[in-house]
Image (cartoon, rainbow, N blue to C red; front, side, top):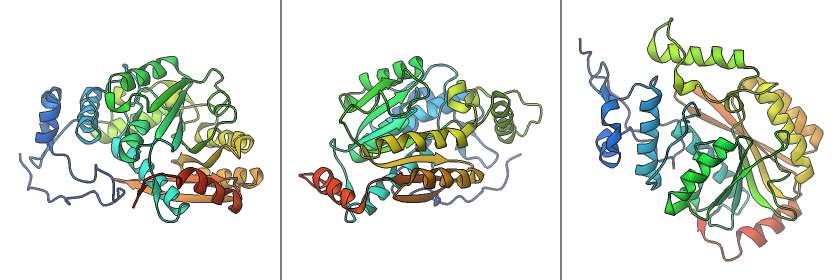
Length: 328
């Protein structure tokens, strides 16, 4: 039975204004650039074209099509059972953090290869560097403790001419380190980003993923969807998001002059109190909390810097405003 046609807004208003994914998916365009998507496009009960978001193959092909259509890739793939991230939300992080740089830089977003971003936990998908380089021409260092993920990210860079020489993927040998072995001695990065493991245990991750699968399928007996069955270091770690971010904050203090803005996604609002406490103990000079929203999900970015006002002034004048283009 076909239901009465549902009126959809032309744009996803909760996404960042510069997010290319605000407009509803045009499957005709996506299929044209990525024909492999064809078998996965279906009609919902309102006769709208969509995909089955509980089908990992469908989600991966949709991601590939979006990256080819909006971000100029000609190749993108990930190994089986690795995270297939929602691109709109990842793009929002990049745009919001760019706005934070603008706030620190006379109202102009610094763009160009001289701006370097460290992605802690780049993953097999390499999504943040892809979007950040395409949107703002930033250089990226992507680190990960998983050699398979690093090999996958390197392959994505190597097989896309537009990314070659712009993204460096580094295997982090010590899983307890975030900056040692990644930021070169005497080197600097302009910002660091991170999407930390969400759950505190394998059991918690499994239960959370079951809830997602059942929500998508409306089937209480539904088996775990492979789209959510990512590798353990992607979904969970001891202490979960809270401990992971507190550890980043603790280590960032030792690199206080090597990075302008450190940042992390915080998915659980309940973790903010602990994060703010850790930042106070670390004596961060400034802390910013940036709300984000996609669909019914709410999250936020917490960013911090240890640079004094004078050091910030020197940084932006010597790195961001020395023969650099600016984006309004």
